[in-house]
Image (spheres, rainbow, N blue to C red):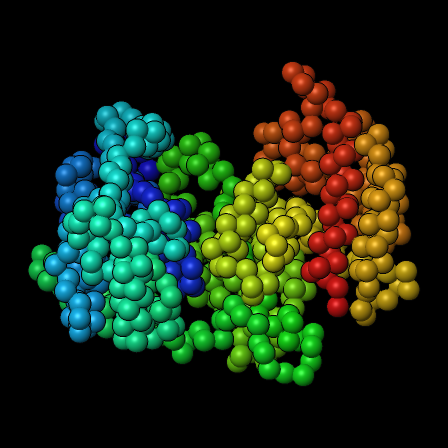
Length: 575
């Protein structure tokens, strides 16, 4: 594809990450990812109707997982694009508001809150549009978009009263929202009673699987939650037909996707995904661990740099990643499900499935990730057909007592940790009830080599290796300050005692350099062609203002890596 002598338009909207992360239930995650994909799809459809070609995202007929950065070949005016976004979002807000007003009646009078819904219809999204000159490449125009995003296009919405219990950032959505009153006569207790009665009525109508009577959600949070309710989805589909179906646009993919989301999220379809301990049962260990979940979030590495280097491959790359996202989203998952797969960006969860006949153990997740890169990311394809970027993943093992929004925040932080520690790796994180966590980051190649499965306890028990041995040894050695930054001898000694000779030698392998060849990789290394360093990029371990490796930094990092291997391995691999 020739990327010059053409006019490119690039569009995006925000907030995306913030919109997804303000989630209390799994339903919120599905609802938010669906809405983001839907808005992108409408903009792409409007561009094609205007006679333009959508370069990215490819495969516009696949509505799920649509990324929110849209690259268009041709002159697609800003006012047309923004109108498409606002019209699409208005369909959503009005469908939700109308359904509530029609179905939750009784004492409620809804005149006051209409203005607030109108404000959220107009100002929920920041919109960014740029267009290049005839001689500018896709990369140039994308850079212009990044510059424009630094100048925010945001309008805040004021309110009187209390804020939502989910994010604390916006007002509670209830019928008296927006009612103007003298602040000196504000009655906090009366407002709390009104809010509670409204959410009890809403919960009675929708069911507690949708709304807990004790919840207090803002308007966008309420929209994310109830848009997946079948009656509201049907109302939205009616609006699709009236708004977009009259001009000949093919909206059937959108309608099918909307029907599917409400079907997928019918309360009976995922009642087994429960973040609470089971109170029944005689086996105390089963009772304690039942409900534990493993959440994972991943993202392709340096996709922007790849497209900047090869802008002519933008469409093909988008098509490849969109196809992969669709494949991964629909792939059978024995003990879990993929929540979102928008190209190279994905989110999923492992949990006890009642129909699987198995109880989730953390070791299952570890084994699944051992084969993740060759079997999932590369789909068992030959080397020449594999993806041209690597992938980093954050995994969090969490108890059922930890709120979902906290787990998701740690998921994002774990993914960021995997990237900051060198990319092309996974960060395993154990999240405790008190908010503390343990983390260990490992490159894919070492996990695939069988590092964790090569562990052997003092009795050399391969059937049920006892990770307590190395865990206790590390605790004693730490208490005696045995790990010295001037040396890695103690840590390496633990490796030799508790892991196979092949794995220990692989980690200890020396090169002609003063630093280990498997420990670090060069800053500009192509990790699709070579191994990622165990400790990450070389630049993180150099002396200040020099290119010389700081051995103390390297020794300290490797000691910590082996210490965390023992601790995280104990929590994830102990049987």
